[in-house]
Length: 531
Image 1 (spheres, rainbow, N blue to C red):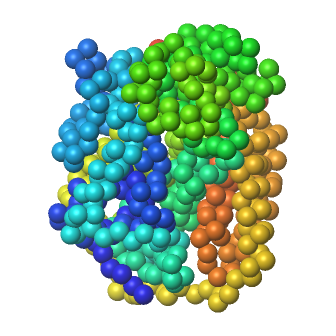
Image 2: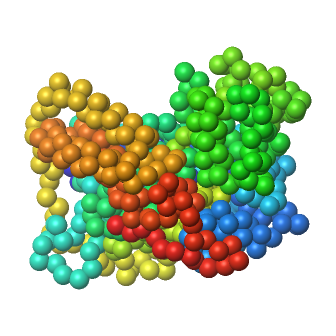
Image 3: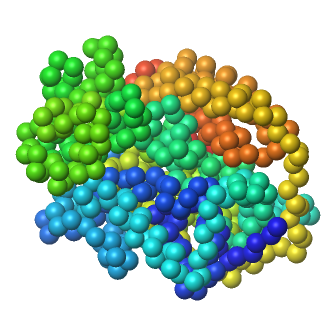
């Protein structure tokens, strides 16, 4: 089966929905999502979206905070582009019906209160409002339970072609029927989010398996800076909950990190204490846990009245209560977990990749906004800014782009084995678990060359095994996800081995020194690890 469209968007998070809404009045839009449309990291975002909205705040302050957090690897052009358009993107959200609370909050690394939020469920509010608009638009179609397998590359369809490589659509698995469809698109946008599920402990939703990054890599696009996986310092530590995030906004309201002895320890590690940038907080927690041999630390906000906690953090208050924790009377047990990927598919500020007709936006992309460490609440801003920039670029360059993505030759229909050995699915599950545990143990918050080499050697063998399964079994979403996390894991290790320094989120005991000069923070200091 073949489906034709103007724009194919892979993913259904905030970046995907925003670009769809901005383009749908002029183009036919098809959104592909491997689960139901509400299942995204975007909908799980608690803290909020960063934007200069207060008269005492300034773009320059927001820019400097971003550059400081990014540890000298940010691209000033991208930082300025996204931050200076932030108030306009907030207006877009308000026009789409998004509701924000009256007060601005402050999070780690920010010099001012500039976080717009909706209680502690900002992502759910934004995503829900945008999804309502998308579902009501006659030019937008959503195909749920459709898993993008691989991109259609012009030179693979027609080997006689020369010149630029372009993308003409995708092969997609219909998870309900089991059939593989061909989607032909004049422009393809990857908005598949991050890759937190490559790690054993993560705040991400179960589908965050780096699909867009893996697909783009297989098609020939450059990938950069995957070593910069941000570990959120505070995820709930409980035997029945492995991915519930405790928002940084709690620390913004005076929450203090304590060790098992009840001692506040963050001031020993950074002048900002518990409001230090996330990489420093995560490493400090990791060090404290190792020193005390305890499985977690604690986040104490008990000095705030219960009414304040229930009104500002209702979702977290209720979730903690569900697990027998009264956050108004006792500290919350927390641990770091893989949270946000600062690297990804190399793009410019418009989301344009190396391949004609292929764009990547949101967490899937590496624009240079985040550098070596994302500043809190800049992620939703990046989703909206990239969606806007991508839309404007395509509107202004539609004919030039589509002239190279429409081919005379038809794509080859999907060819696959007719059956799957059900016994082998147990092995698939085991390999998935092995990759995630390996990445957590060897490519975690603190790294070494020895650990990274061990990870690389094992991943070489795993990738070979995965390729054999993928080639000889009927296509299945579990195999596709395993293939993608194996690819992203291997690329992450390669990026980490190439960085001979500690920088931002990436900390190596073999290269503890960083060359960062804070007096030159508005300059890019160092280089990306590009594969």
